[in-house]
Image 1: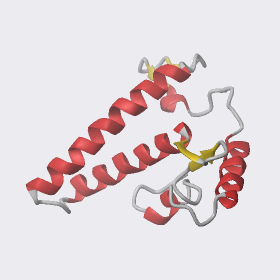
Image 2: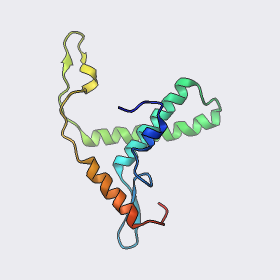
Image 3: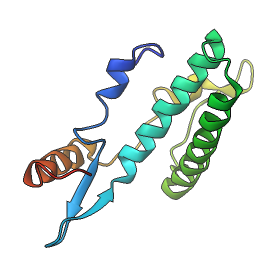
Length: 131
């Protein structure tokens, strides 16, 4: 489980060049949605901790950050809808709430480790090119 304040731990979720790959004979760059999603979760985590702790007071910086964060909220909303996880989450009958927000519920997951290996192998193939 990741700590909200551990920037290094969160940065490790993105492989190499932030999850970008190059495909085709000319090496056209693409972003992998999983890593864009993780980038957005990390950006929102950072915005939350900065706001919670009052670390940014410059209105221009905040305005710029909010524009990016709004993009991330929209992107994550679309990603969640696209995934349409239909796993059932146990209801705590004592207070009619979702039990621990789904912890312990069984989900059918894709192999993200396999995707990470593909991304890292692809980045090694195109070493020296910026993404």
